[in-house]
Length: 432
Image (tube, rainbow, N blue to C red; front, side, top):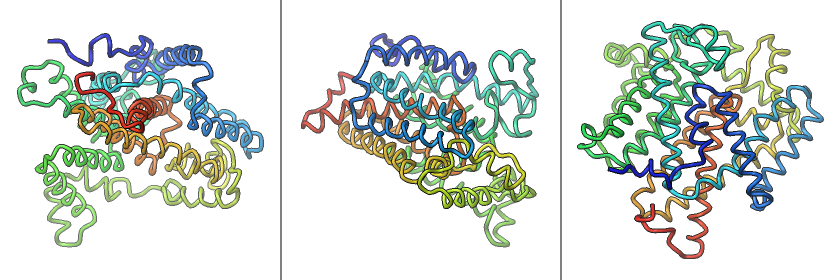
């Protein structure tokens, strides 16, 4: 039987088909393929790429970033930091033109989710079986298995650090759940090879996500599962997740004697990590609250212009004699770097794109495949929540995936909302 997501009419350009699934394993090669695709798209679209108000906002922010770099406290760091923003603005505008149907979003979701099985398997092999890779793997692909994870005991797989891997697995898990629920039937659990592959992938992604030991990702993943359960009316999942959450919270923060009783039932891996007893001896300089207070001071000193991109690390090192790559909150970091006005402008633009995506999802209420767009909204929402407690924009793979997902929401949203604003129905279910 023909599978809808594999039919040629639903395929994306070949460089996307190759670059996106290659990215988790060979980021340099994946970036090269997507970079060539970006150049081809911009060349074919020409000035039409920049005619929408969203493009004007991104253009204004880009111009401001150059000004901020010119007056930055650390000009070289700020100049290097431009690479984390300006190419991705163009990436977002150009790639959104590819995603004009639910079929293409579905195809794109498969390109994200399918390779995550390999990432999870490598991570599990590293932690459970002590897998190590030879030096040439690191030289060739930019990553290597250490046999213990990074930090030791936490799954990192093909990513440099456990939290970065956790964010990746969060995105693939939430997108994959949308694909799984769209085609779910009990019969497919044993008869459809593709559905079995997807089910195994999600199970391994879930186990690997737990082993990253990222508390924020645990909470966001659980929230995402609850949202899906509410969406399809599986109340028993809501009850089970609610009971599990209450037990873990009680074991972590409850009062005696209830806390001790729950600790006999709930694995220490969960309540010890959540209550921070597992890593309770960290220096005060490594605590998030210390970093956030420092960032607030930076914002207070330069509220309008900011300190320049990537300014936190040298400023924090100079003040605390401690090196940290970021302050574990993307939004505070952004505002401290480029100032309050343009920081809020960029955040508001992303929020407006998401709002248009929600509106498009409502217009598609009669289409049974609209859960695909819903999964993109849930995934980007989860990614945004994660950045309240961490920073992912410094990793090229996560940054690329996030802007692609946002481009997917914007690309389909443009098509659907244009039809909806004119009182038309955007296609029929048969056309998807």
